[in-house]
Every structure is written in C-alpha cells, then in structure tokens.
Length: 387
Ligand SMILES: Cc1ncc(COP(=O)(O)O)c(C=O)c1O
Image (cartoon, rainbow, N blue to C red):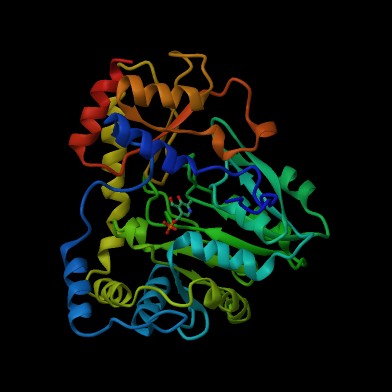
C-alpha cells in the first residue's frame, strides 16, 4: 500500500501538548496537573437531568443553533450577569465546546490572505484554525512575568489585511486577567475598522481576589463586532461533554451558523436540555465558582511553601504558573517531561504556546492545573517540595 503523497496543511502542528502530557502521566503513573480538567464530579442534579431527558425522548437532533430552552437560559444568565440583552433566537448559538465555537467563528470570517492577531502565549487551537482557513496569524506578546498586553505593539500590528483579533481573558496559560483599561484600549484600537473579535471567555466565572471579569459584552464598541465564547465544560466541571456557546450580534451569528451547521450541525440534545434545567434551578452555582477555585488556588500555593519553585501571580483561571529556574536550566519541555517521569507530577511547559522566535530566552516556567481535589493537590505538593 502506498499512501498518497500530500504536503501537510499544518506542517508545524504535532499532537497537542495536553494529550502528550496526559498520556505521559498515564504511562508513568504521575499525578496529572497538566491538562485542564477537574478530577471531581459535576453537580448531581445536572447528571440526573441528562438521564431524565434521555428517558423522556430527547434523543434526536437538537435545533441547529441550540435547544431553545438552553439558549433562553443563556440569555437570562447574560442579562443578569452583564446587564446585556442577547436574543436567544438570533444571537446565541450552542456549540460542541469552545474549540468548535472558535473554529467556526474563524471559518466564518477569515479568508485566504487575511491576518488575524493573537496574543502569545496563545491557546493552542487558535492558530491552526486561522491557518486551515487560509489566514496567517500575527503575534502580539504577553510578556513574562505579568503577561500584560502592550497596546502600542498591537496598534503597530494592525494592517488593512487584519480581519480578526482573538483575545482570551482570564488567560490560559498565564492566569492573567485583563483590566477595564485593556478593554478600553482595544475598543479604541478597532473603532472605525472592520476588524471582528473572538473573545474567548471560557473562564469568565473564575476571577479571584474580588476582581470582576470584564466581558467584551460590556463595551459597545467591542460587543458590536465580537463573538463571545463561553464553555459549560469549565463552569460545571463537564469538560468531557464539550458544550459551549457563542454570543454575537445577529449578522455575525448568521455568518457563524453558516459554518457551524456544516462543521457539527447540532450539539448533544439531552445534555443541552439538562444544562437549561440546571441553569434555571441553580443560577448561583456559577457565581460561587470564583470562591471555589480561589480556595483551590490558595491551597495549591501553600503546597509550594518550602519548595524551590517560585510562583507567578494567578488572577484567574484554574492554572498556576511556576518558575523553576532555581532548580534547573533545562528548557521547559524537557523539564516538564523530567518532572513527570522522575518526580511523578505532570505539568505543561509554557513555551509551547508561543512560536519559537517569541520564546523568551531563559524563561523557565511550567503550568499546573489546580482543578483537583485537595488530596490530589496535597500528594502533588509533597512530591514538588522534594524537587
Ligand atoms: C482558553 C481556552 N479556550 C478554549 C478551550 C476549549 O474549551 P472546550 O473544551 O469547551 O472546547 C480551553 C480549554 O482548556 C481553554 O483553556
């Protein structure tokens, strides 16, 4: 058998680092603080409602844009949280995870020759989505240790070919959270242009120390041009369900749905109905998420006391960055593999989220996920203090 010879459409892309590190953790029996998923259960009521809707017969295709009760529940949530009206019929679309939401938004907007600005370190699905659709990624930097955007730099990157800017706050992997000033700066930059924005807000409920999440929804000059993406996976501890949603003005939503209907068409029906029931029954669940994860963040940070790791600030998400330069000079990918194999704790190297020319020389930083039970974090802490 001879496989057809075909140049790769994504020559730079290998297996995502999340799969690589999780596999290595499984092979070596390491405690897996690499990939971002909880090791605790979703709320029982949510599980009960899925079983209910399966038994009640919701086993065929949902509506293409999402089951209406869920879109209505999302509209109510967004109105309550951000005082913003989004029409369930024409401005809210349910997707198979944030990854598909982002891919569909990019596919709907980016044409060959277009440029899309991303911020490195960048969540690893954005650039392949841009490139598969014929666009090219233009990188702005979020510099260690604070990972703040430099708006003068971004301004200089905008050209007549800039079709899209993809942003992510709270930010994976750094845990940085954009301020009101950041969003105002972005709003000023795009005013009068045709640039569209994808705002990845999957960690919208996970902002710490009393700070508020700034959604682009609250900025008229951003809202009018934005696909706002949130993920139920992060909010309800159900990353395996792969359900998310997109808010966008009707004209943008219509374009998004043209792509969405041929990428996935419709999303798991009983799970959507269960989410709708749960959101109505327990609207406060998401409001409690920041306190829930802040406790875990603080617990993990205490685990590092007496270790040779130096912790970076963590303002949101369920990720903690740690500088290991007092332990090793090895590049972070090497160090993360060593830590997994030899010390039994898996983490994610941060440099993989940036293209080679943007990797700061000598940056020695890895990412730990603290969406874990205290027993898991304590066991990892014991091993990390011994490194
Ligand atoms: C910043 C960011 N965007 C998108 C996703 C993907 O979310 P989903 O699992 O809903 O596709 C993740 C998951 O880790 C993420 O961290």
